[in-house]
Amino acid sequence: MFHKNCPYLLRLPQAFRLQRLVPCILASAVILPAHADSVFVTLEKDNAVVEVDGATGEVRRTVPVGKRPRGILAGRDGLKIFVATSEGNAIAVLDTRTLEPVGRWPVDKDPKTFTLNPLETRLFASNDDDNQLTVVDVESRQVLKRIPIGKEPEGVSISPDGRWVVSTSEADNTATWIDTTSLEPLERTPVDPRPRYSRFTDDGEQLWVSSHDGQSLTIIETATKRPIKTITFKIPDVADRDIGAVGIRIDRDRRYGYVALGRASRVAVIDARTLEVVRYIPVGQRVWNLEFSPDQKRLYTANGLSNDLSIIDLSTFVVTKTVPVGNGPWAIAVLP
Image (cartoon, rainbow, N blue to C red; front, side):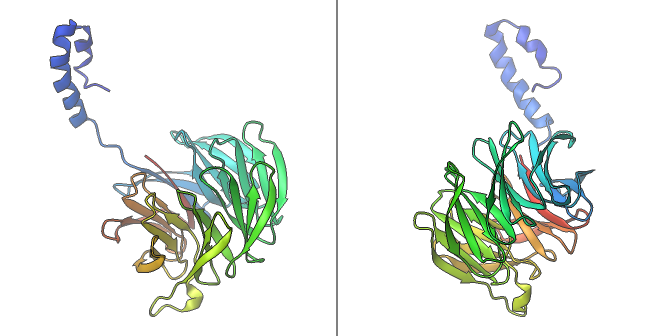
C-alpha cells in the first residue's frame, strides 16, 4: 500500500521510478498504523464473542454468536473463526473482518471443545452430554461418525502430523487416542482425576493432559502412549481444591509450557525440557483458557469470574494489562 502521493510514480520511466519509489515506500511505512493482534474471546454468559486489540487492550467490538459459546479456533487463512455454541449444539463460523455468521456445523449435544485437522477438511468436537466425539466433514457439513469416548468428554487436540486425535474423558480419567484414518479409538491412557484439556507439543513428541481434580499435568510420550511424568501443582496459601488445572499452551521451541489453574487465579510456567514448575503468574479470577500472540511474546488468559482478559509479557512473566471484556470469558483465539 502506497502513500496517497505515490501512485503517480508508477507512471514514470523505469530509470527514475526506483530512486523515487524507495523514499515513498518508506514514507508510507511511517504513515500507516502498526497492525496489532486481534484477540477473540468467547463470553459464556453473554452469548457473545468480543474482539480485543492485543497491543493496546482496547475492546473493538462485541457480537452475539449463539447460546453459551465456549471453545473457539481461528482458521488457517485468518478469514474465519469457529465457535462452539454449547446450548446451540453447533459450531458457528464467523467472518473475522465483520464478525458476521457465514456458516454453521451441527455437532450434536453440548459441544465444548473441538479441533480441525491440518487440512481443515474434518472437524472433531466433544459432546459432553452424549459421551462421544463427533466427526464432521467440513465441506458437506455432514456428520461422518460418532465415536464413543467415555463419560463427559472435553479436551480435544490433534497431533501436528494429523495422525492422532485425542479426547479426554472427565469421569473416566482417560485420554483416548483416535486414528484419524480409520476413525477408531485405538488406545486409552490413564491420567489423574477429571482431565480437562490435552495439547501436543509442536514437534508431536509429547501430549500434555491437565487434570482439574488432580491439580496436575500428565506428560505422555506420543510414540508409546505412556505417561513419562506427572507434575502436581502446589501454591503457597492456596487450597488444593482451588488449583484446577485446565487450559494448556506450549511454545514452539518447547522451552516453556503454560497451564491455567482455574480458581487458583494463577498460570503455572513449566520448563518444558526439565518438566519442572519454575513459577506461578497471578492473573484474573478463575483463569480457564489461554493463548499466545502470533509471535509468542505475549500470553492472553480468559478469567471467568473477574470477567476480564489478562495480557502477560512473556519476557518478564508479568501481567501488563487487565482488560474487562464481558460476562464469563471462557476461551481465546488470536490472529495477527
